[in-house]
Length: 86
Length: 285
Image (cartoon, rainbow over all chains, first blue to last red; front, side):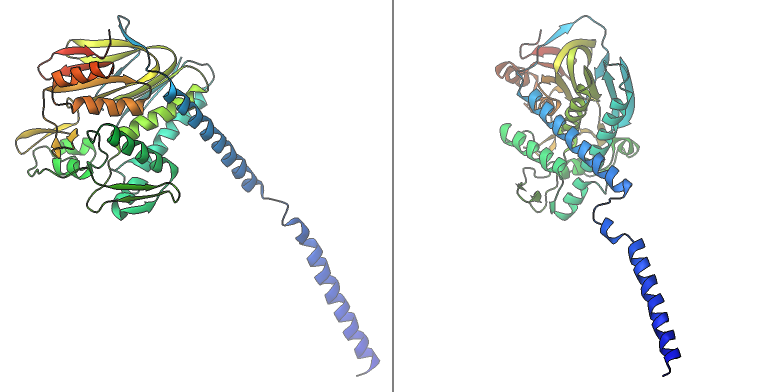
């Protein structure tokens, strides 16, 4: 192998190494773990809000259930809504 | 006052919210009721309840786990008069499809008593429910009451509110005039921070074997309850509790027994007999 051919091999390998390093850096592998997609983050926030709402609803329901029997009486007002057999 | 009306859970639902600019709250309450219906209806083949009834043992979500637990506690408290395992008795009586569809099939033959009181094991550590072989769950009324309580709690954050889903109604935050149908006209009750449920044979009834059938199964006989009661309306702290108490009184046997039980246990109630008599009981005046 002549020096000329050896130099060509070295040049080709250097170029290949350069482009591989470039592709590796451009992919931002160090950012993969920390950056979440915007839709996943929004979904996580939505889930958190739903859980908070559900906890509040459960708490209010438990408070209502612990109240004494509700006062109720017959009145002569027109009804706002009417119940019927379920 | 904001109001929203829609059909869900086999009935017309009305939501009232005494607050301005909270229309989203009504939409969210409607979404919640529809979500719970999709989970807990026996008429939806893909509901979690239908899947449990098909498999007999299943890991379930928190809603089905809680409603089943509440229903089993009610069965114990009422000594079996309220029973969530009446599914097959309802089907045998002809209530095997939504009520709109039953109306088209009135007059079919075939009717037999079916045993109720099946064993239901609830494991809270694994969120698993197991049904005794040959028994299925019907959570119809109690699931509706539970859903009404849940929807009301969601609305109550925004102001005084009322949720009326047919026979199950709950209200909070102020005095609400609520009508109860009687043969002599509509009676108005003033309800504050409480609930009301009506059970009766005046609706959801059909004809089979030449006789009238209805959806209120007596777990003791496995067939629709006999007796002279037409409707029972009860007030309680929550729609879930009112639903159980209304069934308990309806299945007391007859008007006299139901009045005695309502008075003895201080359950405010409006009882209507099939011959048109309307009686207030349990301290209701």
